[in-house]
Image (cartoon, rainbow, N blue to C red; front, side):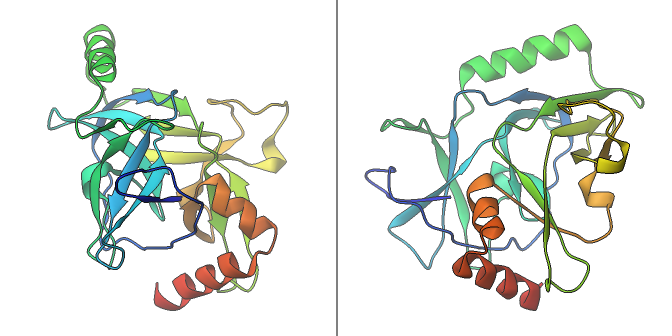
Length: 227
């Protein structure tokens, strides 16, 4: 995450941990990966003059016809409008990194791409599936002993089933037969269905956890105590 002044959303790195209040899992018809580094901006009442940013994983055409950005947010993959936290957090818009371009609506080129994909493939059926690579360094965090120890696994891909449910796919190391492990590989399993699954974090925080950073570990301890 990035902390940035509202007038110039290009600030220094911070690690704010702000858990969500409610589930925001969308019903997804089609995904379009974000390949240009666009970010989602949100704010909360505790930092009224600050915008926080998250790398966008993908743009989704939802069942209600809207197009929104998707980001991994603690336990779920959520839409921009569903992102919230206990400090009255709320989605504020999107930005193009290294510029002052801020916007609220999904980019027109992504809307057109999703329109074209739905015309070509049609709406998903019961046995359909779409899978895209994770390009933002998402890690799944596991713990089976109340966060005394942690295990982090890189998310290889995100899989959307015919009912619109997204899942984060990680490699079952015992089942890997070839590398690199790519989307669709037979060794992939859904992180959310594995014992001890706790949260998703983007790579900046995940790397600090791997390095046993005291602030990151303290934040994990806070989450464990409250949730």
